[in-house]
Length: 99
Image: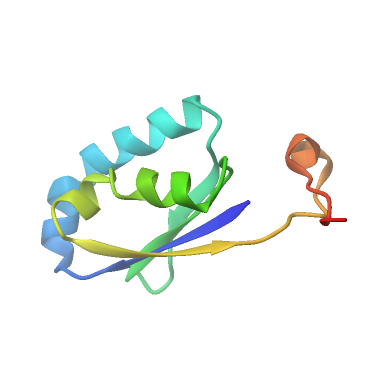
């Protein structure tokens, strides 16, 4: 599992202008089952996405397609973790520790 942390590198007016394209991008990845949760950080200097993916390389390639990244408005920090304990609703995404 991955925590994707966005940090805005542009003024909020530029973020707001591209927000519909970003929300559409998010929607496509929710439909694909890749994104599990997302939202704005408080204070509003970026956002956070909880994601699943094949591997780090695939997830890093995915974040490069975010319209915010394409337009140079944000940077991502990708943190991989093993979700060994999850709420019942996330049970399909529970992971095992390596042997």
